[in-house]
Length: 342
Length: 297
Image 1: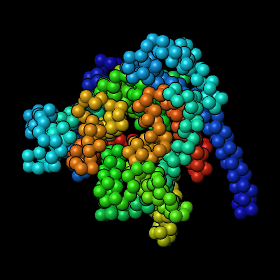
Image 2: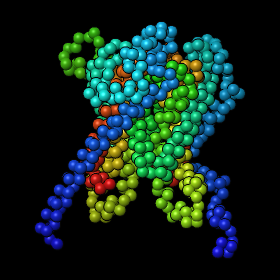
Image 3: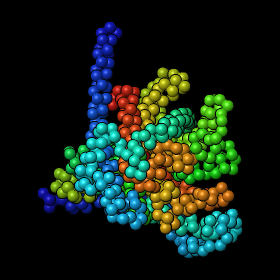
Image 4: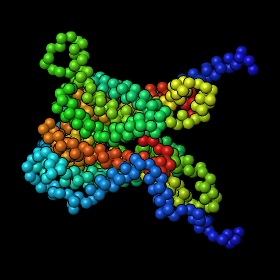
């Protein structure tokens, strides 16, 4: 067969691929509907998991008159049977209404919309830094398996993976903020200080960003590093790598063009986990560094047992996670053509 | 035909099969090859001993009080806390609470995870689909947030409530692994052979499938123990724990406001957490290699 007959064939197969990619994406989008439904059930169950009713819990065991309890129950629609409560709540969600705080009466959306960017900023910076460090060190460690640098990286990764993030946050706050004074201890911006220029304001903000992101990065990098390293080791033992070397390709080309590309494929799927991991970390870190984001808001609301707010917030977070997973899955399908034939 | 066979199939399968003690020895021999996992095993052993023997070897009673916030010295190796209690003794007694929390939660996780994974794998179809969807959703939601939401609604937040909630939210990963192993082992030749010999489903599950899933289950359980210890400590630190318990989380929560002038109050309980987790992770890693399990956390 000559090249001329081969080329229309390959074009055709490319067409088939893009068709299947499209159906794959559509299928994933449709799957969001039952998933969202299931999430709403799970969140609703979590809130109602505790014995007794949420209104009682909200009052925190304080002695409250019967009338007030009844009033609160009616305000929240708690006098209805449980499935009616769920359906009412679901109906609101479908109208894009996250509900309102019981304590302040404010819509949840209004309360959180300025918090979201702060949390997302923290997570995005942590994500990019972690990915960069993990890939570079993961490749080096895998290529030089059993070397000193591999041992050092692997041991620090397992320590980073094992260290409790809230304790690391406390310790770094103590050492780098309180003792050394290198970084501010809390907040996102120094207050009560006029900045000479927007550039100075940005610099000040970045100084606030360093410690919280460093803690988030330490855990996630450790996790990703282990993934990259083991994936890279697996790829390096494959026959096509031996073939590439046998062809006389430069080691650099073998590693970066042949091995790394394939090694990163499974890592893309782990990226889907990143938002869950980083959000869990953000809850703790935001509280320690007084970073006014979703995590701090959630803990505050949970301490007040403002349960309508908690439900709305949980749904919001769940949607963020869903979208992140969806994009990770689609990205994976785009980079790895095999996935569509599953 | 049957009477010609010298022994029943059961006896035959025992021939040439290493006894349980030998199997353990083989695993231990493989485990010993990796220095890191031996270190991990040592750490786990050390901390468990410290926890078990706390009433005997702790230098002070945990309720004993002396001068508050004394830095580490010969008298108080880890210093004293804000109420004048000896930190070393507190950390040792804290190990009892924290490790108990880890083990108890893993026990709940094991029961739920293995049962649900087996049910999904055995029945398949609609039941499998529903269970696996729930599993996927719980796995993607941020654990810390779900724990906070669930626990904040309890008016009494004892240690047992935290254990229960963590266990109820902790099974999905295990269930998914058990299910997928169940499905792949079901298709193996030895299960087919057992079936052709007329073994009942129950016997096949208990004697052939379950023992083969066991290694993955052990590895996951080992590596989950430190996570539950963490989660409890984190929840307690954020104010959702049981302040009456003496877990490491409570020690950190109490020490946090005083940390600027007494670093030792937060340093040692945290180091205890770090070492416990390191021990279980290294040991779990070693077990994974020794038992040849291909699960990723």
